[in-house]
Length: 379
Image 1 (cartoon, rainbow, N blue to C red):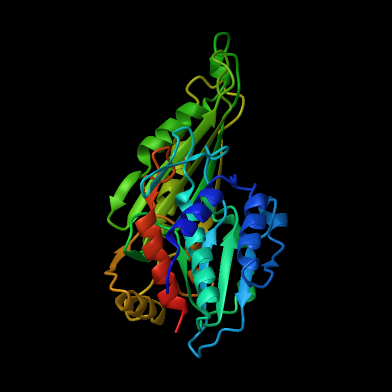
Image 2 (image 1 turned 90 degrees about the vertical axis):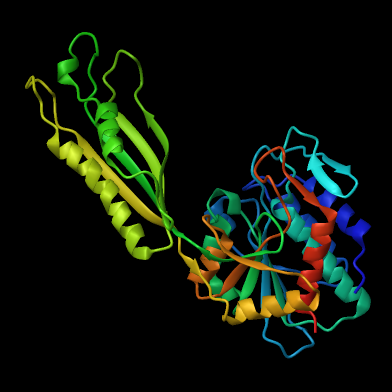
């Protein structure tokens, strides 16, 4: 199974230099479709998720139904979008290492994986290799909340297990990731002139500060974190601030801890507002709290004995690739698929320093990733 490394490199560069920031994945969807269909792939199914995500296109599913082995079907997933700054990317190649020229990200997250899938399919076609019934899934809006995967109807996926090619480093397999609750807190006070009659107002900023000081935050234990990520409030220095909006998250590998910490945060805010008193008796109302919570993504938890992991281990052994099995702290499309009852492991692709202008990847790692894909999907 000869992988054409220079072709793989050219494919990767072309993918990276095609802009695809989140919600603007249209050109990338067209390019990936052209690259795969030009070497015998069937036209993809595009779902209607764009109406929910706001993307230029839906998720793409390439179905290779004429797999010629009797093994259980598999799906392989990558995301089409990139973070910012991701416009006008120019790839700098130095030997077999790829970076951007420094003003943008590179885009190896997740285009190193996409390039590997395209090269693997080309090798299959050129060598007339037998392959398993197969689906390639390309999602949109992964980088802004896994929106494409969340909007994808899981019944559109025919395979019952698969792999998300999307993590830094190489030779790493992520078999666990936390669930996450996202919260939005609105503290409402009373506006008043800060110089003339501040007694008539209620400072939402002060109340929010007291609650934040009382709430859990940071690393709670090895399974659980809490973060208050954004805060907005106030309109001018001479106005008692009427409203504060705080957004944050709780992550945990324990559903019980996720629920408990989320409740503790809400309790901290409600306690501060309940304890508020009006020492002057002149305030023009009472403070109010709105606390909204949504499950951002469900927990991912696989075992080494699961079929999806055994199959990956066997494929890696066939090409002599050692693997490490790790627990992650972040979320990915794999969380969504696992939450839908589709066991999905996360496979590292070789990318490093992702989400920064120092992002890089090597041709050797992309070649090995392609070899691993081929070992997974061919007889």
